[in-house]
Image 1: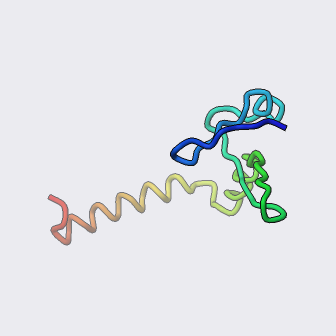
Image 2: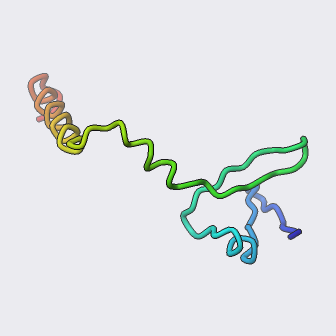
Length: 83
């Protein structure tokens, strides 16, 4: 078990040995939860789970999104909101 200090801004540093063992690197997301009322569990977020969330989008979604942005710009121009 590692002992860490809570900073003035309520931050803690995950010790290097633990980060390396779990595979946490800069920019990774972690989940935290309280267990048994006084224990904090920190676990690395499964980044692959987010890629599964886009399966429902059409293949040409980027094209659709771009056209939506273009449409809103022309709409704002018609309304006189954008020069």
